[in-house]
Image 1 (tube, rainbow, N blue to C red):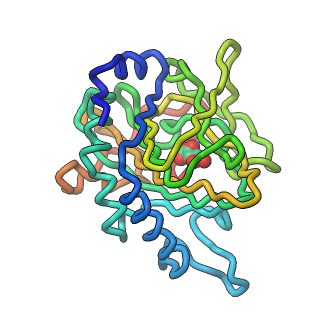
Image 2: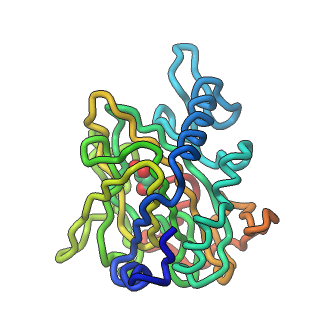
Length: 265
Ligand SMILES: O=C(O)CCC(=O)C(=O)O
């Protein structure tokens, strides 16, 4: 694995607010993760993902095909949330001992809407340093056509912005943070096993899946640093790296919108 302290990787992160590590998790493990979630997709999971009478998938986000907090019932998700290959990078980039906040898995089959550009810390509300950090692990090849992640380099230095309304035809969630003048989004084309790390202020999102045949599956893990004593209640209990449960305090940081967001985004 590439050491984030070496080869200018840390410098790249500090400059850009994201870091892509190629081949962090080998293909055979990626296939195991994919197969486990295909099983969850087929069998459903009470309270997280199930099918209505017409056979449509129902979950936290109505018919948007993703699952939130699978680490709470699935040992494999929890294993990757606490995997040192991922958490060592998070520790280095946060410059703090990580606490795990959640996993999410996106199936994103052909035709699925995207997620408008946004900043994660508006939702997690971790109060120190970068706020939270995401590790976005590609399960399939992620391309511009099937709706890969897009990031706005340098946006990690911005304050949290109050979102505008996104285009409901293209995006599932309607909170949209436009890149300010002078900032441009870039597409992160990734292979299975590549992992993209980005901070809680980094503006990012994804376009709809325009492919006729390819899903764009991904496992996403979110962390905060231990120095951030606060985090939105939706993420409690957090997990320390040894698996211990930790309860974060309620956020006091305030919101750029006046109202706080707490829940999946
Ligand atoms: O994977 C995606 O399409 C969007 C994920 C994302 O932006 C997030 O979970 O914050």
